[in-house]
Image (cartoon, rainbow, N blue to C red; front, side, top):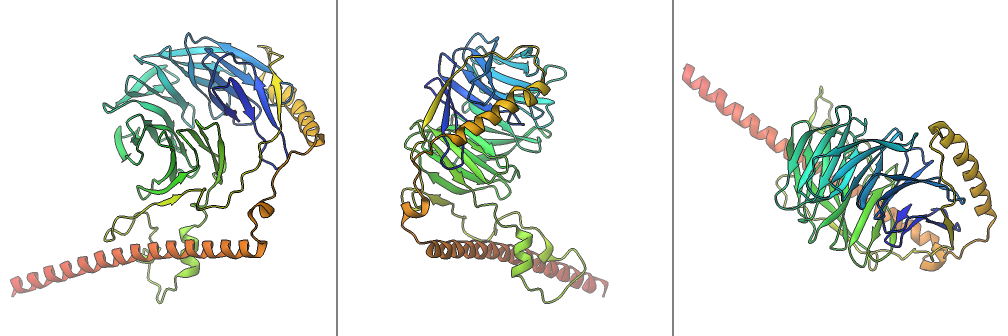
Length: 433
């Protein structure tokens, strides 16, 4: 699902030869959109000061949540799908009940426009960022601010919790991405890899990677374990406004000011270090654990030169597999969900039945014009398979070399320690004599 300045919410089906659906209801530009965790609802925020809850089907049912007195900048579901949190230019953060579709409470401490607000995984905390240059942590039970991080260099455009809920990442207008530990209340990592403001970030479900979207027109993927940039992605012709990983992390989508939505496939988490070691390292002897070769590598080789990131430009580096725009069906909001509808009703009554009928209707409609990947590229399947195999082998080789370099560093450190111990023993022996 995507939102846009054209006041429309778009629902895209990723399967080939399916139509897209345009939902019309907001009277001003949309600023944010998110699926509920169960996929039964869509929430959208708009500059018309409202939030809408949509049932993603061809009938366009939606209900309106009113309470903000200025543009709503972001909206996000809690992980149990029972609550919504919204951030607005009225300097407030508001929490809503999805079941009863009413305002629960508001949080006021920011002194400027609030750009973004997100729930933690357990729903107990909320993080928000504002143009007052602060990032605040809120306790939803006590409805109070329990911590605040200040950034004097610029304000955060976007903020979110990592999957474990122990850290937060902020995307700064001063080109900087920061990771904070909310338990120790300290800055963990600091990345200045963009040439313009960072608009959005998204954690990989593993928590090991972070992808960033910037006004400099690029996406960058950071390896949080090694603390470095690993990929720079080009594709948008202008600022990149948003990015989000899929639920499983195998894909991510980006949206830009060029009115394009790009869908990317990940490959950086395809190989597991332990599996590589199992298949590619021959141990000549087995010692009692822990053994040097059993240590999981988490940092680059310290004696190497600075590791370089990979730059990917689809225009030059990748075969163009972009399809034609699908036919779009426009759906106007015609029905407001009653306030007494329960969450169970939403899951099983209108949504499931209407979604089923929507699926049947869309499957019976005419197929859209879609390019066949193999025909469009002109590459034979055998050659494509061979190239994929070569790339996989190169990935394995690169990771194996990285592991060996790590082991070499550990061995050198161990030898150095042994020599120091030997010198100490010799000195002690001479002193005793």
